[in-house]
Amino acid sequence: MSVSQREPFLYVPHIFRRRGGCRIKAAIYCRLSKEDAAKTGPESESIQNQRSMLLRYAAEHGYTVQEVYIDEDYSGADRRRPAFNQMLAAAERREFDVILAKTQSRFTRDMELVEKYLHGKFAEWGIRFIAVVDHVDTQDRAGKKARQINGLINEWYLEDLSDNVRSVLTHKRWQGDYIATFALYGYRKDPADHSRLLPDPEAAAVVRHIYALYLQGYGTARIAHILNAEGIPPPSVYRQQHGGPAHTGSGQWSRATLHQMLTNRTYAGDLEQGRRRKVSYKSARSVRLPRSQWIVVPGTHEGLVSRADFAAVQARLARRGRGAL
Image (cartoon, rainbow, N blue to C red; front, side, top):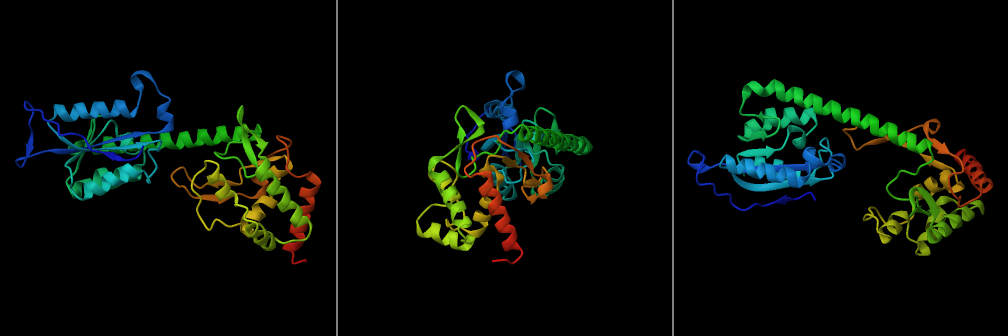
């Protein structure tokens, strides 16, 4: 869930605070990441826990809750959080006076965003930010250094978490575990062990067809034309047809897609992973690593083509790369 949710008017007659004669309007922000979802007991960060705490706080302080904004399965460093950005846009329009969050880290773990909003934009927009549990209140000017230290600690946490996750994933790759969300085209995940690949008969036949055409002398442009003419859906479309995310792009086979398939050792039965790495835990951008840094574990699953055919394809690709026919 990552949408704003409107709350009913909260009427608390015995605590009725006004600002310039008008009832103070509040927005509530709740966020849950996958790591938080594993917590149970009194430290639970569940959306329900955050929401009920903040609604109670708003009632006790006589605030009218205008909106409850919820981002689920989003990191505190993710700047693309849908509800988070809806809330910021509403704040700029002055649709409320105060933002309530359980902790400063629920709002963000990014030090740059702490400075930009808590100490910059919110002051410009007349927005007060309160984190209930760690007693953050931007109305308290003396607490600025504490908020900055809190922001640094939260950012260090994210950096350490990113390093730990990367280390675990690297270990899993070297163990021969397949860690991608979706199986490589031509395969499906083993229902009994999602870290193992099994051939997907329908797509595997297409992979073998591609390798056979290339070994017969067809180039990738000609093979793409043949597959498109035959009405065979490319990997992105095939994945969508089998429950995956909506595809982007033309929905046609391309030379780039075919080249990736023809150079991937996974099709010969050797699990190849780690071709790319994110430039930073703060960025979605990734860079391609040199082949020497790829992680390849031999004999992890059934190959769709023989090693001899795979080697022959690599030799032909090398010759064509040097300008040979």
